[in-house]
Image 1 (cartoon, rainbow, N blue to C red):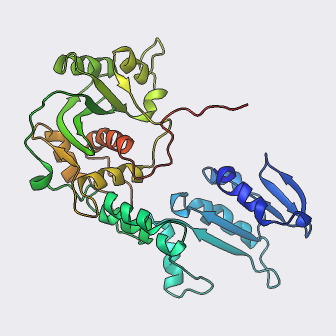
Image 2: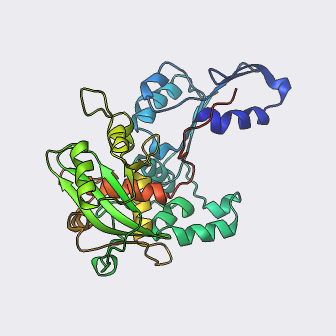
Image 3: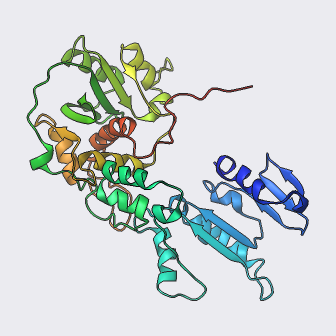
Length: 353
């Protein structure tokens, strides 16, 4: 990701006469003044140890592990810090609730020594057209829009799916045929699936399947029994590509495909935040429009949407009450069809030689 986003841009900013050597494999640039610029990933903070630093930029810090800064990079700045060489750090990112990124941002707002904080909206950045921002305001729910486009630290404590309202979200609907869209979570106790009909930009969830102590084969048989001879697309947990459920080495994805279902799954898991935002945005957009509804047959889905909360003091969903399975199944379906982010590849990339 560092290479895709920063490498070419960084090289274009440095005049050739300042360069001694570039290494595209190691993502390092050596300059004539003896300095070295390096691009690194932070998914494994321990890999960043052992380097004395003069200046460090942590981009999308809200998505990093806090220990990347506190346990690894902060001490690395101390190794080089002196009165003649004051070391520095720059934290950049989109708010993600009031987590460790918020804690550092608040230092500058509170006037802590040697800290400064700045906050810019997307429109102030000048890189996104106003009509696109207006469209985003229409597509996203209010809280997501404030976070992603207005750079606001929205409080995520409490109810996760705050846009679900039983009076508005639960409707009467008679299944009149058509393609079934099914979101599926593979937890074996229970296996969970949400069955929906798509009408343009609207999803109507008409049924749910909950099977305890089960497996993917039994879930496939249950779908066929309930909806025989029905065109069906299943949107499973992306882990279905690798998760083997039998001694024969079959994966959950291959079981569904061999049962005659079309499957659509991302090559990797979207961020939990993006999945939740996608569902909330469908439940109610920033313009007050609703595009996700449920019939009263979806009792477990409705119960889960009404009751799942974040762990106290965190932005992590609480999984202790068992409400996460059906919400995850719904999220895989909604996020694939109506992602808040649009930079995911839905097909395998072509390798060009």
